[in-house]
Image 1 (cartoon, rainbow, N blue to C red):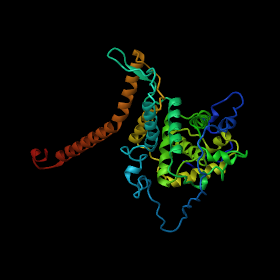
Image 2 (image 1 turned 135 degrees about the horizontal axis):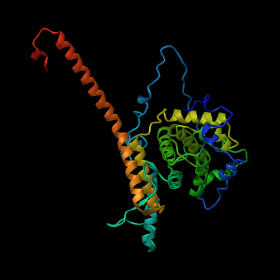
Image 3 (image 1 turned 180 degrees about the vertical axis):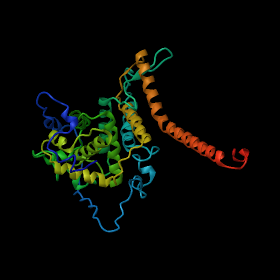
Length: 373
């Protein structure tokens, strides 16, 4: 993963994007860089970025490379501050969104604003309503909306403007066009963040699960590197998280050179350098436990409910009930495979031991009852 020689330098497209044939490619760059001006709230400009320290991987005699299992949980970080590592730690984006949610509810209460007609459907004894999103198969469009909303709250309710030069768009621009300095003084709107992420996911044919893993890596980076996501660095941080998540999650990952075809002004060398720094700042901890993934999925659903991003609920039909039953059975079979392997292995050892005892019985001169254990 992240091999700049094997998957980043090739001039050809990756096998995944190579499957798309037909007319000329759409101009994703113009869609990514639409104007973000609007009713944004002005913030103080970001301070000068700090160059990240280079890690010395120089080989010397007796050089000890730490095993990845020893790097997955940094000792100097408490579990409570690592929601991307521990399933019981609260996600950062949900905590940051609660301030706005409480203010909105308080304002509606003081102004006697009616919630309006209830659009959410609830199950009854005769009808069960389900949406088309599950933890194993999330809805792509809704998941991207929720993930970008989480990024929006990260930017809006950030503590400071701490950044690193490798993620600063002023030092490493994603376009050759001159970006006005005023652009970096305003927080991007949610719809602009959604358009940027949606374009990358559409062009690279990424999945909804990859979007959730992207958010996990983003919060892990902010925690480990002790930086903030702000108007000057949010695009490159999100791009780096998507790049890494697609390589970890997808068996047929998109190469770095393919992202250069989507963002036509960025170079492969820049992508490789950003990926390398991203991995170093994560301390090469790319593991996402199933419990952490599930926690982020359900917290994103809570975020959607708090912001009226309702999922599409439909009555449960007989055909869909059968499909859900098949999915559940497949999941149970996957969980039972390791236990079945252990049981078969123990039974094999027991039979082998019995065979050895039988051979010893036939050749021994002691009574049969002495060997019968």
